Image 1 (cartoon, rainbow, N blue to C red):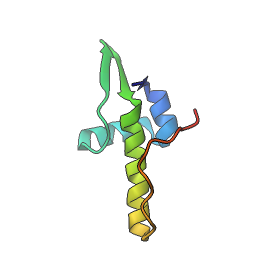
Image 2: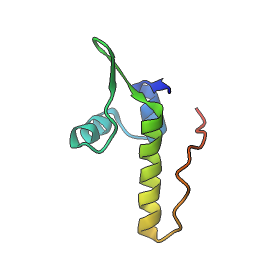
Image 3: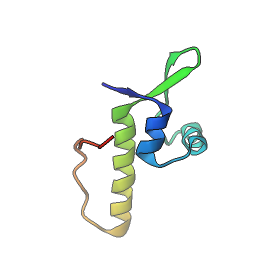
Length: 76
């Protein structure tokens, strides 16, 4: 298991910081894990699964075949 910081979440999702926290508030994005008094991170696999779910939603909306949800390596 790997914990990633906000910069990597932003880089991985393409979302702005404010959008990430908006989605967390709405319950549609993985919650951060407290790492200290003023430090949080996210579980890499949860963020990855969230990205895969967005891809699956897109493909279903377009009527395309559903992709495998197995974990694929994401370039950093």
